[in-house]
Image (cartoon, rainbow, N blue to C red; front, side, top):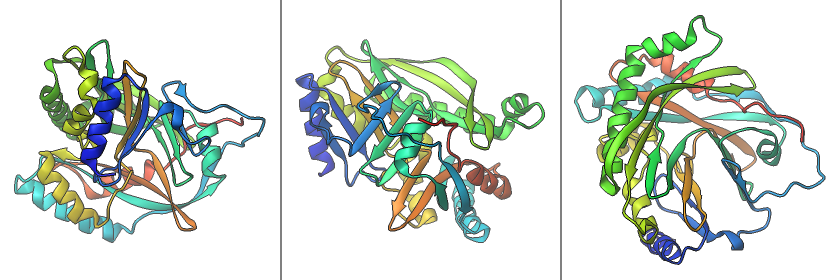
Length: 327
């Protein structure tokens, strides 16, 4: 479906208050939209902060785990990192999210990952990929639009981990930059933009232990009957600033040169419109199938202060399955 057609279809559904599910890839080449009542049974499963189309059957799933990892070679990562750092030093970007796939072996299947893991946003799409994202793209309710950019991660087991994270100048600059970017993005579609919570710490539990991350809450006011332009609102905000960078257009060009492959649905967005309100996620924490292999996509924000070894390690540490349980 051409992206312009997606926009028109979403606006039509919004005007008629028709509940729908949507999925948009990073390159905006293969968007998907479908009324909730017409979703293929069992082929597309979602759980969006408790709103789900999944009906549990009697099958028992065992909590899966990553049994092996083969990350991108450090030399290849360093090559992309150096290209990014050169562009940052030229002033062509101020923050860039650099990502690479890690080949994994999974003790379990993608359905088990969906049913057994805990995450704010989960999506299993045609057994092609599973996403268990902690990050909101935008949430709209009562004519207000919210976004919650996440930047800054640390291993919770480290001594004084929370204070280390909050005191890190590199993490502070990265977070300030993404908050400014998202404020500017919301200003395209809304008025009275304000930061209602700034750089608060959340804990995410993984199979390898807990990690801490910092997020902020930004809010703006929409016009009455914003639903009639819901597709246009989504289009104006893409790609998500937290997984591209700033300024967006030039940064996306640099990403394509550094990563040397399309992201596809990874770092795209997905969500549901329930007829009145919208909730959506950034498609991170993402496992995709390529032939008979599985790849976990991960990355992190790069600034001029970034250290290549630390960023490479962060990419690897983000390859995890959230705490799960047998179901």
